[in-house]
Image (tube, rainbow, N blue to C red; front, side, top):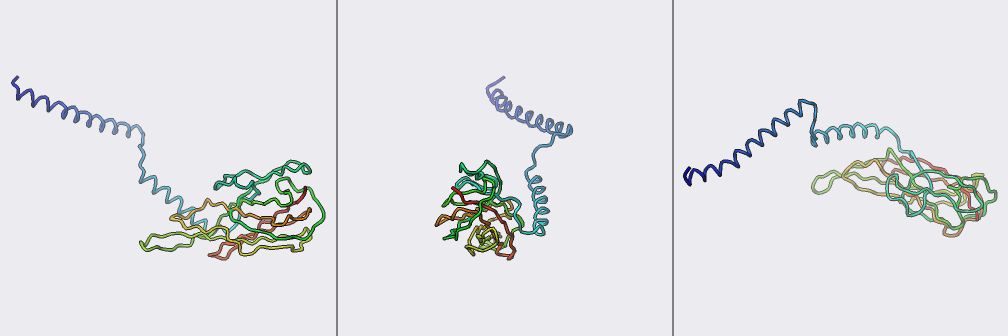
Length: 236
């Protein structure tokens, strides 16, 4: 074998090996497919997911604006949808209990007239004078208001506000906070997993007693509202 023949032969070996490997791979893939092993098809799966989501969003439009879950939580523990630590009073004068819920925003309450009567409200709804109350809320059925930017890409706006009304157990209104901004979100997607945090600050500590706190949550684009009423106790 002369020098040129050895050179050509040496070049041909890698090419031959590559062809054999390619043919073997194609045969193996064909065999695996016949055996029912399906490889990931990202485009196909994405289309299927979009179709399922579109069906869900069609039902969403008719579901109605409402809260499916709400509870008082510890301030600073809400980190997103379903991520929070529920509020449980550490006051020695009340028994242990718990409760659950979601929310998002901030509000202040000024002086509230004295209210008598202390009831057995669960410790989750029992607060100390001056303690801030954080209500976590998971709303559904809110509006995705479409708009387009300069590049003609569609964005969806979620715009929610709230009103907080503080009343005595007999229904007498003691104080209120109106038109409280809660969340305004602009997204590329029609978000459905959304949590709100409604914050009620006792600027002046509430007198010891029982109260009804009514939260009126408003979907601003549609004008629809839902109410959440909580019975709370202020005690030392």
